[in-house]
Length: 88
Image (cartoon, rainbow, N blue to C red; front, side, top):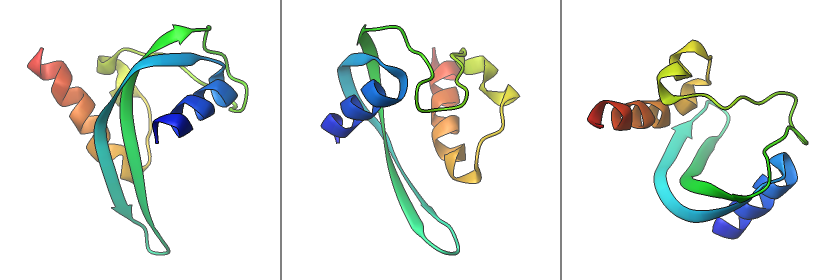
């Protein structure tokens, strides 16, 4: 999974990462399929993030996440991120 993450971040936003750690495993059932997303935390080791394979991207502070719309499946991980904000 870590190799996939490294490859995708290089392809999608042109960064190399370090300090990769598992953060959360998200499972969600849609009517037509079930998904599992493995979420990691990491640091940027090299490169400046830029939108290569995506239309738009934004770097925001955790407290700004509520200003954005996310799919229903993403809600548990967003809550976990926000919970971390409240614990600090």
